[in-house]
Image: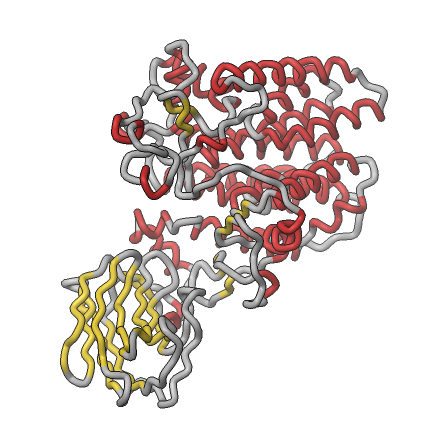
Amino acid sequence: MRSFAGSIGLAIAAYYLWTAQSIRPFASDPARLGYYELLAQGFAAGHLYLPITPPAELLALPNPYDPAANSRYRLHDAILFGGRYYMLHLPGPAVALFLPWRLITRHDLPENLALVLFCLGGFAFSTASLSRLLGRTDPWSVLALGLCTGIPFLLATVRMYEVAIGAGYFFVSAGIYFLLANRFTASGIMFAFAIASRPQLALVALAALIAIRLVKGRPLAFAIPVAAVGLLLAWYNYSRFGSIFEFGARYQLSGIADNRLIPAAGNLLPGLYYFLFSPPDFSAVFPFARAVFRFPFGDSHWTLPPRYFLEPVIGALWQAPFLIAAAASRRLRPLAASAIAVLLFLVSIGFTTQRYEADFLPLLVWVSLAAIGNLRFRPIPILFGAIVSLALAISGPYDNLLRNRPETYLRIAHVFSPIARFRPALNPGFSAAFTAQFTPQPEHYREPLLTLGRQEFRYFLYAEHVAGKVRIASRQAESEIDCLIDPTRPAAFAVLYDPAARTMHVSIDGQERITHPIANLVTAPADETIAENRIDPNITEPRFTGRITRP
């Protein structure tokens, strides 16, 4: 059993390494260094700012924080203060890994290598601590700790955000391991670095301190390094912004005018829905489950609170359906409560994105597995969650594997797509013909005509009612070409894709009206639909009076 569990662990480690390199190799590019690489350079040179000079055009703007005005000049999501760029996130990962690497090797540590090191370390510590707690190594627990925690999704796209979260995961996992080993000083150091990576993880550190007091351990040995790092972080903020309580969010340069994270009760209900319950978009086409934009609770009349930020999210219970078992663990109740407290904090700020689930999900999975060790349990929930998590990681937030290595993506897809109808292909020949009768609709009302694919290279042909006309738009990503037609009579459409020229030809009533060069087209026959919206939630379902048919 132990050797089988070890084999699963090695397979998961190999998967982590492959995923982290699937977008780019483990090598720094001097032309596009990551923010943590830049911060380590700054620390090595003896200053706290990033070694990039903001352009004079940005500094000359009346309001350099206006996203519409600074879009041409800004270093995205950097903090601009006092004529310098600063790091958005706290410096824990830079101090723990990036700076030592640079001082020892004289080279920059690639962010994707740093993230995979943090994630591998977190996986190893969480597995070892669960084994220490239960006195055995369970293959299903290893599988769950490796795949059902939201960590595979982090590895699919590596930026400073994912590095910070991955570092927090590592330090919390290590802190729990040392806590169980009664090495309270080492545990305190790990939790201190967790806070210096993700400040909300102070809630987990507090739970660890409570656990130490409950077992009559040495709380001071734990608390002293945490307090010391807290003082250093206060100095870090004061040195940058003149206030120990200023983290710099108000000075962040991004596409959002106001980046402050302000907790609000109105965010709780939609946030809990998205972080816990929001279902995937299931499909018979690889990768079978994807995160999509959804209205809260499936209600299109629901209005999200002001300032609410939302990206496509799959709820944690779909990735780890066994989380309910965490309630059965009495001795680990403080840790479970701290993970829930982190969840509630994230929910309250109204900033909902898939990667944030890795702030609380690994700890909840760990506590649940500890409880399951003492309960009758079947592996089906773990297997289901692992499959959903792998599917989510394949898509990632931006379909990076498909975008950057479509051939690799399709090779994997073909292995898992034995039925041709559900097998995606790269630039297949395609043609369709249909007719439509339009009726008067509100201004800018949109109706889908043709949808090909569901991911990065999806194609969309739609109709929009504008000033008594119908605008026919051919779109892929940000590229769009359109034409106007008379809506008072039926229109016959013929659509032909030329894979050699990668061009979409749209003819209306026998005349070619749109010639649209597009990027790669990736689609399976099952994802080629007429008059069905599978792409854009802002485009309503069709209300044609005539029939749309394939010849």
